[in-house]
Image (cartoon, rainbow, N blue to C red; front, side):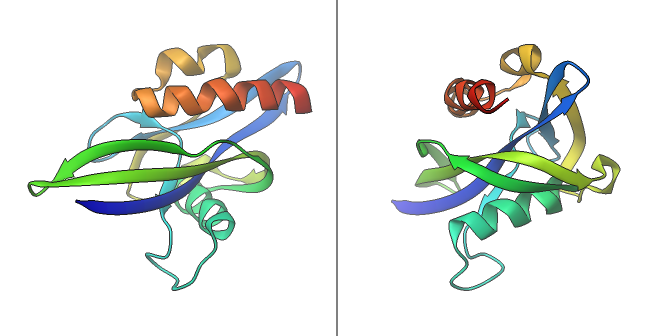
Length: 142
């Protein structure tokens, strides 16, 4: 058994009277997710907050500012016959700028989605759970 730790962001912006949420479609498994990446896979000793901000920008082209953490999400998956327990630290972020057309190869699509449509678009149970908490926080902030 192996343990893996990632960090990412649930990013929002206000567009007129609507709240928009950043979602992306992974190039490998084609699922719709929130951007995230492994802590310390590029920078040794990197803090989870720094990983979250960096990964959001790399994977989506959007710069985000952390406003609040949510409860970590945990799930199991298997790779090369090995079971891996993954913990993801998500942060609610406010969009500071950027361009979703400047996303990296890991994501085949990046979109701003109306808040009410997020639960239907997100593919995985763990991200749906994260969204349930993040949605309340976004509504409280906005």
